[in-house]
Length: 465
Image: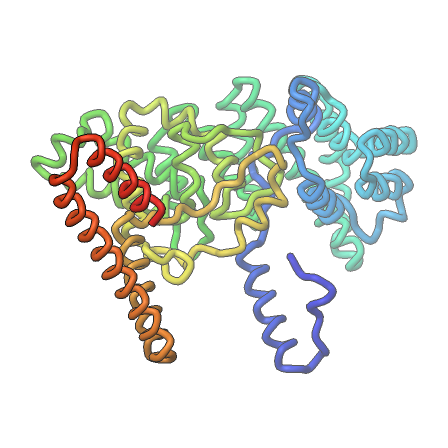
């Protein structure tokens, strides 16, 4: 990511090995993830474009989605089924109308082509109700194909690959159906689908279904269930996310936020529960420092992208877009966040070099976020400390003094002449001013008109000097 053709070195050289190691490190830091709560292209992203005339998704983001679709929904045995062959080409199409046309062609060849229904639900449906209807048709076809693949999975490696593909399709359909139910207000139904998915397909934790579950449980205000999910996924051995860190902070903030007052806390100090809440906020802010500005509405939200960069601005937008209402619902939670979040930066003075609870903040996030987020959005960067004016003034004074000392050491004769010239000019100015004052004393002997004329000439002479 970010490599150029001109920077390619000869293979086997030390510089080549160093560059490859650095590039591997940057790629691991800037790995993008599929947004667990990504919106529907037809029913949400396209409606935004109709209203505002702006494109909420970048080409880079949509290209990543195309790669995901080819990975999840295709396999080496697609040539055995004509409809799957057509869909394999459809996922590679850049033009949305061409993809939709290919999906209809696949359905003409096979009315039970689940991936064709998926594409139509994502991109052609203009409402969530239409998308849900198409996903239900996809679910019916997907379950039939999945059962058929299960019966043949041990016959050959090709059949195993086909089963993996059909499993991915089925999980994707059920997940999107759960998101449709969540958007249409059937939250308990959505929670049930997500829990069943996590039990039936535990290896697919990489899809981060638990983040969908956390958001739905927060909407139900089932905070005990939220805590149970966090106890399982907020583990030191598992990757973190803004959803996990900030949800943990929200739960601890909830116990003290309604009675928290900065004035009272400054007089009596923080209680144990308040200290735990503040530490949880500091932990969350260290993981992703961009989230508080969106939660506190200091920065405008936009539609979240289809992919996010952990610890980046894209992840902050995706989290705040869905979770801002949960913070607002708890009285005093945003007040406590506002009073404490900036203290994190005093704890971590050099975030790019050393962290406190996490690895140092990746320096490549800004570049990756600019690729993921639309051009009309001002990308948030890691807050930098602003030095006071006194430090800038002292630094400038010391620098100028050191420069004069260095010039005097290197060129003593020239600097001596320069200093002598300045001294003589000062002495000359003082002598001219003194003579002017002496002459003014002599004017006392002159008449009034002569004295005024003399004073005018001397004033003009002094001005010219």
